[in-house]
Image (tube, rainbow over all chains, first blue to last red; front, side):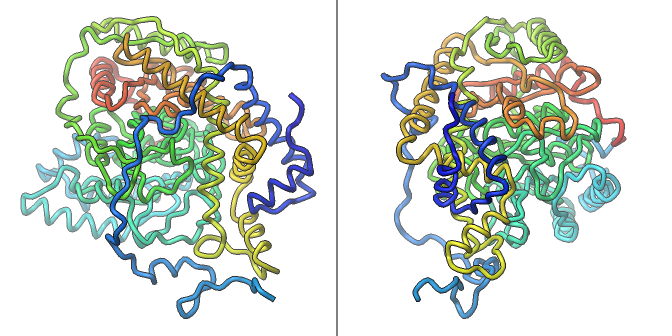
Amino acid sequence: MNDLVNEKTLVELSTLAALPFEPEKSKATLDALNEVLALVGQMQSLDISDVAPLAHPLERHQTLRADTVTEIIDASALSQNAPLYEAGLYFVPKVIE
Amino acid sequence: MNLNFATLTDLQKALRNRDVSATELTQHYLTRIDALDPALNSFISIQAEAALGAARRADERLARGDARPLTGIPIAQKDIFCLQGQRTTAGSKMLGNFIAPYTATCSEKLADAGAITLGKTNMDEFAMGSSNENSYFGAVHNPWDPKLIPGGSSGGSAAAVAAGLCAASTGTDTGGSIRQPAAMCGLTGLKPTYGRISRWGMIAFASSLDQAGPMTRTAQDAAILLEHMAGHDPRDSTSLNEPVPNFSEDIGKNIKGLRIGVCREFFTEGLDPAVERSIREALAVYESLGATLVDISLPHTPYSVSAYYVIAPAECSANLARLDGIRYGHRCLDPENLQDLYQRSRGEGFGEEVKKRILVGTFALSAGYFDAFYNRAQKIRRLIKEDFVKAFEQVDVIAGPTAPTPAFPLGEKASNPVEMYLQDIFTISASLAGVPAMSIPVEFANGLPVGLQLIGNYLQEGSLLQAAHQFQQETHWHTLTPPEAL
């Protein structure tokens, strides 16, 4: 199979995946991705036009609980993991000029 | 009694008879961890103070005569389970300083049953790996030979039990991450039916595949631990609402007449001949116990690795999107803007294997490729599941090798990812189908542990445990211990 990912696709994928595009590593990354995609390409040889995709291994529906508050986690236990948190706010770089 | 390698059953008795106190036992393992773990690197963090506090409370409970099933038993937990107030890293720099705000349901159940957590074990980053070389906290060494890998991704959990640093441990299995390290370290490891154990509080890799399970010395111990990890949890919408059988009481049933399917696709070219000999030897033991061997086929097995390396990365790319450097996790210095913050934080926080799988998953889910990759993989998943459904019309249990080789040297496959992925060639199909499967030690090959994989029908963990237990009544492979750790 021809390589499915080229440098242009890698730039797009990196943006979609919110990962940095690192030009100095791009050849190694492309080789690694295309190697995995060649492996998964083996499944293209199977005729599966009449098969329905499997959504759940046991084919059960997810059981949803009532949409009500059942427990409250202390906000300070959550915010202690934030890299930059002050006065009840998560800080991010300026998004509106 | 040799406390180092005592089973849960032995320790339950010793604690109740006051032959040893929970405090002595906990201190015993902590001392061994101090002495032996620098060479193994099986733990990421040790909670000595909390463990000794829990041990004191366990001793009070034992003195009052109201011990619970696991009161005073020190275990280790894979560092993928959130334990409230404790660092939970998933083997990643990204979560290097993450303090869990709540406790995973299955860890809470174990604590309620009286188990004491000694610490959190090392693992491949976000459970992505088969050798435990992908941890930000360094590779784990196999107690049978420190030059070898312990298997992965639950390599720390396997090495810690095998080296006698704890009585048992918890692991997680997405494509073989309990069974393969159990095989390579000479342990009993069980991946239950998908949904049998709650995934709540277990850091997600691939949500339709991830399952927690026990890693122990014996099938009896696996039954005991499973009983206290399993059960419906309304906080996990994929948790099965099914009763949990009394696995440890039912384990003694004889297996005369058990029909064991020997899957021909599991005896392929890549299987090490020494491993094959051990597996055939184990099958002969089963015949001598009155089981019948039936030749079966799971014809879509050769496609399982391909389907898995689409589905698992697709799910991981979605699950790991939450790690953005804002609410928790690593954050880069001086971001120029929001996009720069996301990209550099994730670029610095994730290791190479994780980034690769995120990119593969993003590709498989992207417009134009979704049908050819993700949808196709999910169709193949159905075919794999149907293979099992058909097979279980003929047999009760399916047997074969857990891994194609025994443990291999650290670094040997690091530059050959496809060869590494093929380590899970025999374990992945049970994960895709969601059926329970376990690995038990059989005759060693070249002085190293080998695992026999037993796969069961949906919710039939009991049959697997009975088959494993009867084998362990007849053989001694599960009682062998690594020379270095003695």
